[in-house]
Image 1 (tube, rainbow, N blue to C red):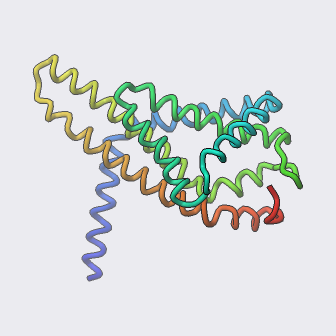
Image 2 (image 1 turned 180 degrees about the horizontal axis):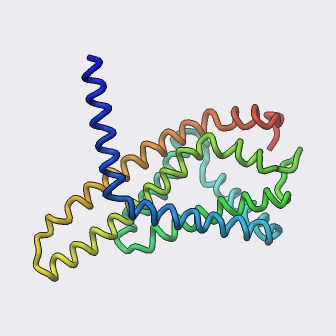
Image 3 (image 1 turned 135 degrees about the vertical axis):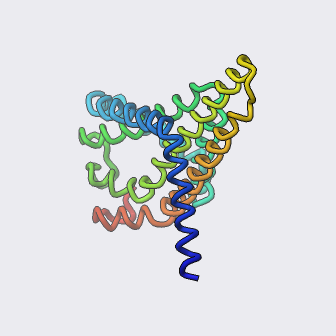
Amino acid sequence: MYNMVLDNIGRYLAFLTGIYQRNKTVLTISTGIFLGFLFLGVLFGYFSSSFIENFLKNFFKLLREAIVEINTLSIFIKNLQAVLIMYVGGIIVIVPVIVLSFNGFILGSFFGCVLHGDLNTATTVLTPWHFIAFTMPHGIFELPALIIAGAAGFRISTLVIGLIKSVIRKKPVSDQYWKFKDSIALLAIAIVLLFIAAIIEANFTGIIGYYLTGLPVTSS
């Protein structure tokens, strides 16, 4: 039994290692786009904090209105939509770029405003520690999921390009099949991570955040 468990773990690790090695380039591109716009967002949020503060308040208000009830399923579905848009949108390349850029920029702008000290609740001015405490419990799963989903979208882009080249050069299109399989694997990993993130965000992030920051639970 013990050896069987070790064998299964070994197979999973080999599978994940293979996925990473074959898709290192698209994962790097996805990470670079997200982090690049995250950094731009931080700068913009810090130096244009008044504009970004108003924008973010309106944005989050619309987001709250779009989600009638905040629970694991509603959060998961909201994030799943973005992931599926990136995946299917990989057919025309630019869609994953837009989704990654937007999410990175919004997150960075939020953090930039917090750094500047311009975001506050009814009882306190938000600090970088507040930001970390209320985003990282689920963010450690959600952000990698977003990046991996972006990579899945880019893998679809390479699949489309590869198929076109195969047809033009009269080569077997089956040579491109591995790209489709890897895109599905990347998408599945992203969805699993998103589901874990949704569970944490709906049920534990608030508890952890209030505990770490000492804010009163009734604050808004």
